[in-house]
Length: 400
Image 1 (spheres, rainbow, N blue to C red):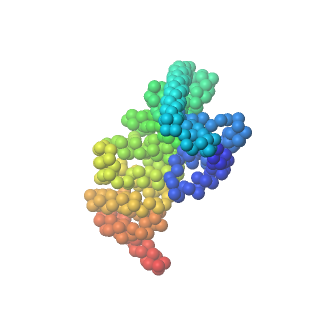
Image 2: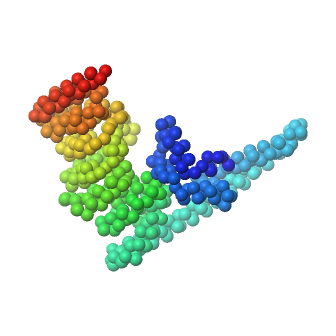
Image 3: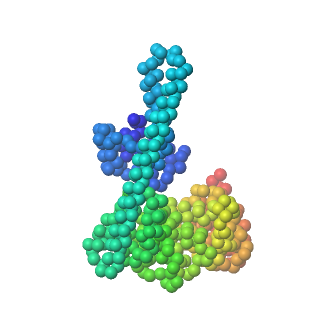
């Protein structure tokens, strides 16, 4: 067995840190090795003591498992028979036929085991969903504490399923029907755990909050905004991908109730990393995205309406640093375009002012572009922005 399988969680974390600059690491992997997990170390120790034997993943191709077995078999045969190099051609053909037969037999066995395992998993998932449905109905009708505790326990099993199965399970469970009170209880429970996959949080937020928020036609309730505030502080990035981006990029129009939810999430403690992820996703190349997916993107992503400008103001009113210069240039391009279309828009003038004050470190290489954009503004903020641009230009020149 390779020594890498026997590393402690701490050593794994060190290995990931060393290679992060060369290879992108999935957030789920980071989540697993974020701490020196005792449970992982215990598992590795049991492998060392031969209490656990490595198993073949269900998605592995049986033919490769069989071939590996045959190759090892051949290697042993070669070592044993190295003094018998003059075997006849007939014998060689027989050995080849035997090996092919072995591959076929092993492939069939692994396929049968794989199908049996999948059937078993599907059956367990079905039973779990049926139990949750029954408990959900009981809680809705009687609101018993014992039912709620059992629901949480079963739901914790459900949310740890592989994300494809989780998506299907949520559809069957009709989780979008869940009321705000039980949803808050669920959120308070699952956000405390560190062993739930990142993708599963994204799916959970899409199937619960996203559908609820899209259906709002009046002012969002305090309870809903309170729940969103809690999850934003602890699970910011899944909230970006599960809620904010679908609400902004998949809606042809952002109505007032949805806008209030979006700005409340952004202003309610979203981490710097999450804010930067949101900006990157909003200002990647729209045309490239459009051509590759054949999806008509909403007009407000390029020609900003009042809702989009309000969202951008909320974003740039937060403290963060943009290191991705390509994305920054994309944003400034769209800012310039929209100032041509709406030179008297006060919020656009405020965004310009935020760039040269709150984000001055990030925009030092783009002062000329900001100056060109500011010249197009007809608001009273134009003078302040241009004065700050001149000051930053002088400061940059003196440091060269």
